[in-house]
Length: 135
Ligand code: FAD
Image (cartoon, rainbow, N blue to C red; front, side):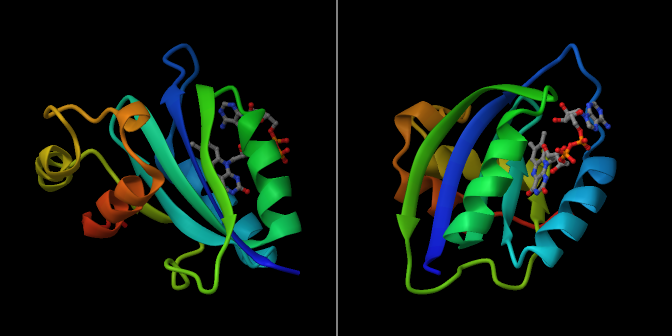
């Protein structure tokens, strides 16, 4: 089975309550049992998530996530086979909406608000790698 990395972006659905801790705790258990690793950046309004693992596991996880009503306008940014994982230590590293992380946005974006639709997959990955883990 080929190692695969998938990146997507989505918007928070403000009509449904979203508790990061609760979602992460069940997502991490599922990811661990499926050998899926990755990182999730929540800017307060948008999600940028990287999923890494076997192609079947990543695909199945993405389809489950895409059905989740806690977010909307889900757009696939990229999905490629890769030689190695970047986030191998995290069943799902979480980057929150902190001052430090907000300050990083300008480095990768044309304004000080994040516009994932104007960023390449490489730039989104670089942005995620530059952030400070929230937990
Ligand atoms: P169930 O737990 O049976 O839930 C079915 C549906 O109910 C969900 O799709 C959702 O729409 C809704 N729901 C469930 N819990 C809540 C809640 N507390 N509040 C409101 N609605 C709820 N899962 C992973 O396995 N790995 C991940 O990396 C991952 N990342 C995620 C990132 C984001 C931004 C979001 C929003 C969710 C993520 N999830 C992740 C959770 C995923 O969407 C599924 O809820 C989870 O995988 C369980 O799948 P299930 O089919 O058993 O859903």
